Image (tube, rainbow, N blue to C red):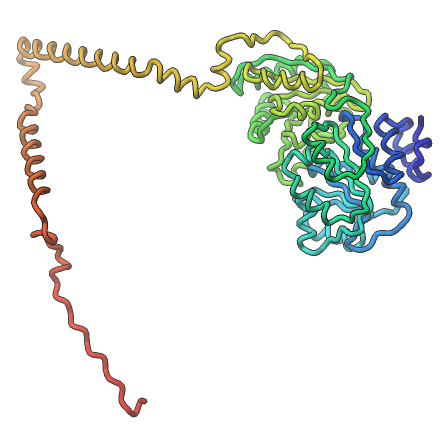
Length: 492
């Protein structure tokens, strides 16, 4: 089957040939005819199979007839991240080179003024993240009543990351007769039940088992100690020993770890850069462009780079931290081995990561091979998982007994020292004269007892007023107030 058999327009086919594509992928071959027929589609396919072109190509064919009006886009595409939204915009510029269509990109970190200019001209295609889209709508700069096709890309991530209220609000702003298309690499049952609320009699296109990984990716696990510096040492070793490594993406679970690992790699002579959500948009795009143009060999990133980014030449993916959600593992390693290429995915694991490994293998249905060995039967696993709790338990079990023993030993040593000092005082008079003993504490104890007794007696007596000790400012005479002058009748 070729693209000409799918019913695409001549302009779109010419752009596809110019881009170098000859045959559609399975998800493209099954989804494009249904999108052209304006049916609701729920597409599930593993990452790297060309889901973006599955809705981009038919949308271009449908948009050839008609014209956009100011602030009323004809199609709407929602993306979970800014990078993925910018990538979809590039796809429209490649496949729509023979069309005179206006594409507007609404993402955060960019000036509102430039975005408003495109909206005022009339946008045929509107690509946006939910937050910035609602910002424009609340300002009265956008109307969604003219949307004909509504696409939610990475549907599971959009619904699972807290975007449910935003998507529900956006759906209420769209016309009821719209066409809705959902695409994702994973579709758990919980997320699919939410997706059914936005689709009407959808055609489900599933070309691979949900949450499966590409067979062209070689997956490995390597053991490491629980400390961060242990994992950084293992990461450097894996990078140095990797065969045919052109470039690689290193994923971390936390943003602060992204910066730490990036600095560590740069310190050891690697060409590395960082990418995470707290960076401003200009820095994020510059780092991503440097990685795509091979100016950076290693990209240390959070999960912001795990979804939909199409960088075909990525040869390796390293998981510095195993993801807490098994679905994220599928998306992470899907950055390599794309479009039939071979790739390698190596994950660094500690004893505390056993439950994450089991969840990943259960989700994907594959057993991941180990580089070396990992002994999960060790009793120290609980100490690695929760060292603070074990420290408290050890303190509760033996701390009190050790404290009592230490106190008794201190008392014995003090009494021994006193005996030795008294014996030495009797034999060596010169030393006593040179270092006189401090006064006996008995008088101090008697004074303290008498003072405490007097204080208790004072406390028993009833004190009236402030006693004999009156502050000086209270003894000063009070000045009489001057009489106010009366108003004269003439003034009235």
